[in-house]
Amino acid sequence: MKVHLFPKDHKFFDLFREDAANLREGALALQDLVDHYEDVEGKYQRIKAIEHQGDNLTHLLFTRLRDTFVTPLEREDIHDLSSGLDDVLDCIEGVASRMWTYKLEKPTPDIKRLVDIIVKAVDQIFEAVDHLESLGRVHDFCQQINLLEYEADVICREAIADLFAKAETPAELKNLIMLKEIYSRLEIAADRCEDVANVIEEIIVKST
Image (cartoon, rainbow, N blue to C red; front, side, top):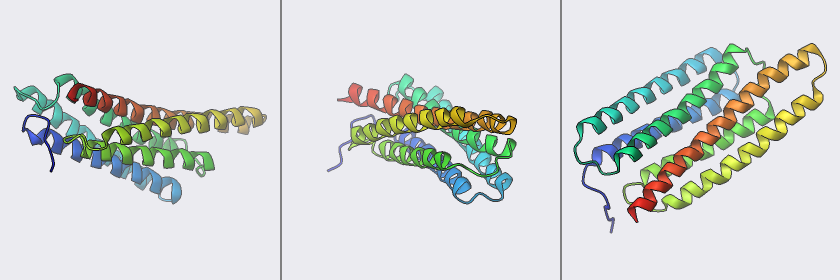
């Protein structure tokens, strides 16, 4: 039997689910961009539109927070979770933006590996948010996000070190600067996923 541990205002949880689903759509759109690297501008514009929808959902959550007297979670937690989801999507849009703006010839294997990690982390965020109302298995999803963030950190660090080791010509140095920015933005996206997991973990602690 499903047990509800929070006051019965389901709209916040519905909005969180919608926001997490939109975030997952953005992550999958980025994966499609790097796996099928064509029509880069068109695919970037799609990600930008998804990011704009994320902004709208964040605004709706903040508006509801302002207008609701009794909230199902602490007000600070609602604010932090909303902001955290928005931050992850901002990073995803930032990666796509840089690929398009810098006219990246093609994604490197490390970019694809990092994007795969982001997609997996966002999937775990979606599952955690979907189970947040009942707290079912939420800790397991957060733990997976933490492991994925560590994996992304290792890949990014090694990829950037490899760039510095090989860059000699002006063209290689230019490529280093461009790829380092993209790798770093992907690492930040993984960090922001971990930030969301930390907010959810805090909610769990306060609710048990």
